[in-house]
Length: 287
Image 1 (cartoon, rainbow, N blue to C red):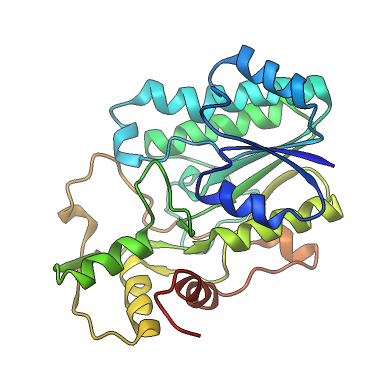
Image 2: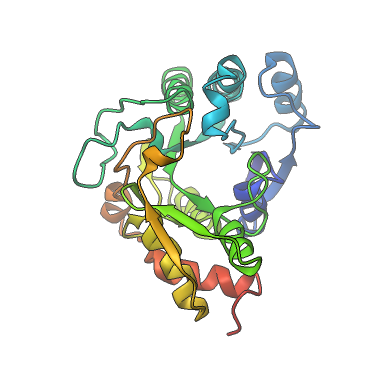
């Protein structure tokens, strides 16, 4: 099996390259492939003839997307369309990485795969457009919705990840204020990568799959758990998100449920367990 990974040096792409054992990996970065350009996508895919394409490329800066609307859609939607078209030509399996931000956050229980998306910001809308292009232009597709990712490589578009960022703030004695009314699933990229590998091995029906660490919490609760595991006494001030003056609205409750994975007999571990392993992996915590 030949698996082409778009965004191979990104936060998720890096872990995917390590998790996919026993397959031929074709790692492509932005320097190798301009996803918004159909010709470059065709040339790369025709050269490598992949059996599977995993598209981790994304414009992820949520507030910037409100201003750079065209750029967000070029990467998240048009890029997905280009990948879908060429995957169909090659009869390759198309895996598109999407987000919990396709939902509006008005539901009071975790979202299922067949709940109706209703994005409330440009980022979420561009990713939902990418979902639709993936679904409607390539029959052999998996749309994987993830949430609040953190991983060793960090998100290139964000300059790192939340866990490392908040630990660095604590180390420099900066005041830490964290929103306490927005709920999500903190998710370790290593766990997502391993589950994608399992999905490829069992080859279930195509469609949408949620893939997050089990359980959900507020960003405030997540931050408290980081320092609880580390054993650090850190003062954290809970605040409301309206105090942050962000450009983009965020869904208040965007927790996902891995309903279809469970039906396959697969399970993601609790977010607390994943977080502890990440802290060990990065050297913040000794085993």
